[in-house]
Length: 101
Image (cartoon, rainbow, N blue to C red; front, side):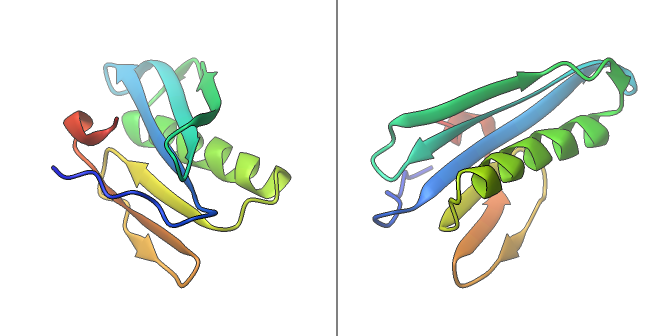
């Protein structure tokens, strides 16, 4: 996997969530970095008992809420499942765990 730097002014959200069993005890988490790779914000959320998909959704939702609150509109999203979307000012895709650096 090759790291591609973000365009100037962009931010990237790496997000994931896990459950011990599905459903099971959960944790959603994410990190937002600027275009130079500097960590801007990190979050962890304990959701109690839920499925893997619910947890991953909440990790994505939390990251998107931070983008909106901070008025960050040039964003890239990377999750650990098959979330795919694209737009002129945003992109989203899947990355393997080894690529989340």
